[in-house]
Image 1 (cartoon, rainbow, N blue to C red):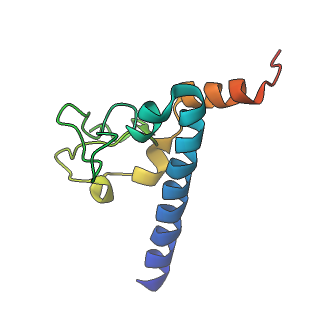
Image 2: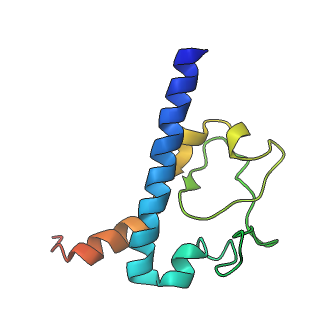
Length: 109
């Protein structure tokens, strides 16, 4: 139990860190509301940043990637702690990665 718990805590930390660093990237190219509104899935200026009613649910397909930045509503499995292969499915979206490259002003040929 101890080794599993430590591994999960490390994965949680990495996931949270990637999400929080992602806010800075989103803010630079999409603005504060886009970033801290979690790509439109939460209220920016609410006290608790609650998830909007129209936010997407976690994808049911266990092979579908889960974007790091938006908040998701629970699906039939529940919240993020109950999603199959959750940490393996978490990714930065293609748009976010391309925007990060654009922000660096790298000349890609």
